[in-house]
Image (cartoon, helix red, strand yellow):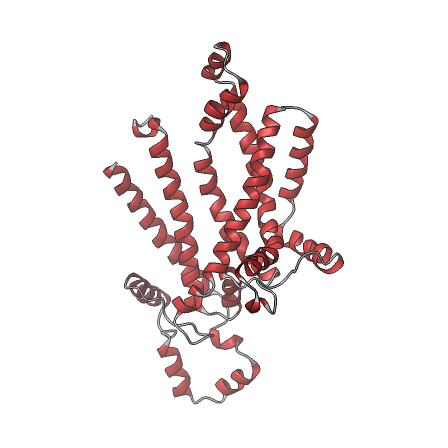
Length: 328
């Protein structure tokens, strides 16, 4: 166990350093600077600056140094617990991100919840009724949803359910007067606003999760111990819940490790489309304004979540599957 953890931590640390280096180089080598995307009034003010003032501004943010030196200084600051100061908001980066993280976490968990309550039952029914009309129709429908890009679905949802039918709000996180609501009404209003963006994020996972559930259940149902349980006279209900369903849950440890990166990446687009005030929207804004400290901090956070998902997947397999502990 100790050797497994050491090797995993070493791999994660090396991968993390490589990810941050690549992202840092891409951001720094991209055209433009934080000063080239200021508003017109700010551009004029900078244009009127004396060369010494402009140079002092570059030195303050270390933009006058070679890229690798900037990366070394940034990495040292990160390891000592400092994320720097946002160029656009002139505040510590951790405070800017801290305000946005809860909204993104809520949207992602709500999306995952919608994905599970739709896909898992559909996959179970498809496995139990293999090659039936439901199996074929649901499979085709979910694959069609998987093929559609999330940003296009988001626009269609806004046009149909927001503008045309007016069933759901399509921007923001709360109603204008939500501060006057009681707890239950405030919570209901939050879910009401989150439904469309969460559903957009969940749609791409419907096909993946439902087909994965179906194939896993079918594989388990064909195992010898299932046939033995049937031969001993056990009821199908008991076999399904005590053997089939329990055994089929092990591969889901891997599945959620694969879904997490998709959700982290997808929230950037969806939050921007629906004006959801989360970290994804902040990331896109930071890219537009060349707010390097915010871009790097959010990239580090995203990389950490993906690597954490991978580590938890491996650890989960190590715990629940004895074969991995025996090296088989």
